[in-house]
Image 1 (cartoon, helix red, strand yellow):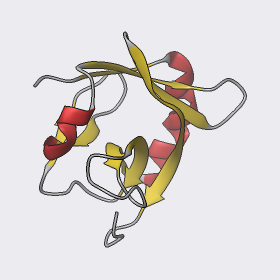
Image 2 (cartoon, one colour; image 1 turned 45 degrees about the vertical axis):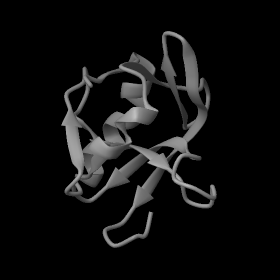
Image 3 (cartoon, one colour; image 1 turned 90 degrees about the horizontal axis):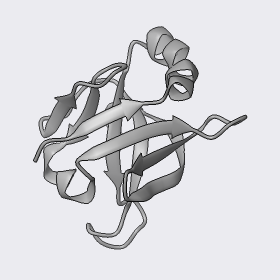
Length: 114
């Protein structure tokens, strides 16, 4: 499955200094923490120290974004990351749906059990 991720200009502005100052990577995750089972989850935007073994770096119009290969089934082929105006909350959209309309950027440290 091929995946295309595009950042809006507003999302790039909101993330540019965070990514540059942290020297960490963005990861589009499918977070199942507290959801009950592996197919129940929500797309999440994480800031991580390093890629996991199952991560794939997707080239974007901003910075590469890590995505778990085993979770690709939960995402659409073409997605856009935007930011809600006046907030630091992001949105993940595809041409056919909003995958997550309220997606905060979460710092995930190495060793966190997510």
